[in-house]
Image (cartoon, rainbow, N blue to C red):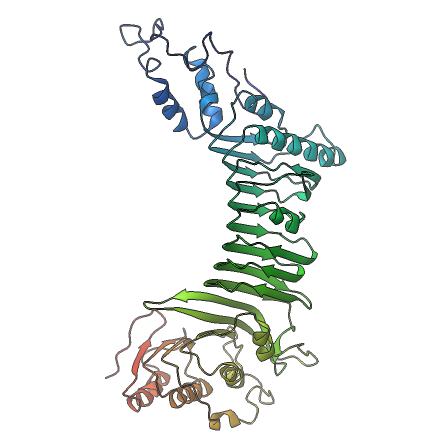
Length: 486
């Protein structure tokens, strides 16, 4: 029977059930000379293995047309994958009604298409009802792993989610859901890993109902929230994406791995209590002018992450900085104040990606050095799309007094600079680093596109590196080929 969704429902099973081991069937005119269907005569376990390798429950159901031996056999599969069109779930629920409970894995997804039977308002209501019904059907099958991905061009209201007591893994992608409501009572008693992508759910209540939860990944999309609170005694890994949330509170005594994407579009606070934290990844996206320095440089992106070396782990801080030499723009906080707000800020690696637009960045760099002088690794990525010098009255160089600054970087061992144009102020910055880092072991410099090996600017580095023979100095052209000085 062919359904509108594209699913094919099997004919009624023969007497004795789909699992009965009957003698091989004779199919007249099958072209093999003896009329015997040898495939259908295989043990049921092998036939189920064949069906499982088809990768689609719809394709497996179509095998019911081969012979009575195959009829309904697909419903005995313990891992089922369904993809349907639009948001009409009735045919899918009819198919699932033929499956016995105790699935290992149930995967359901849809291909979005316009549904002309419902207006926008009708679609809004019916989608919620259909998905709630689909979840109830899935709950009856008691899958150990449940994956549901439903995309629709309409947002839909309250979708009701059962507790799936047997599920150890649940992955729900419902970006159109305006609200996901939990059952009045019950727990996700076996759940160890949860992935959710939808805007509105009572996250605190959901986590309270997951006593064995170890891994949690949450993407709240662009939903606006005043507060996100996560309190779990069992949680070991957490990935949290909440761009438009004002306050975040996390209490997880067993948490070892934490990934966090956050948007600063106003005043926000973050509270993290995780004494066993080992691996850390943090990404902040900033609204223009929230964090800056001298009103000339604004922070666009902040990333902090744990990196594992040969012997130990290192915490690295990476900043993307924009040139913003505009009058009347005042930042709310300095870079130093922003780093001090971080719950974990004992970083040993510093990466600065600076969009210079031709301006002198030395004072910004000194400001960053003073935040934490004990860095061991420094990487500078210089991006200049303007290829021009700033105006004579620009205050980016101030009075040039930074050239005489004395700063101590006692632990700095490794320096990497990309996009080096060998402009006078960049050469002065290089010399400042060399004289401030007595333990420096290596420095790699990669030229920007406009500098060639024959360029006089390339030769500027030769005398500097000769004067610092104890440091391994390498120079590369824009193609990353090593330049050898004569």
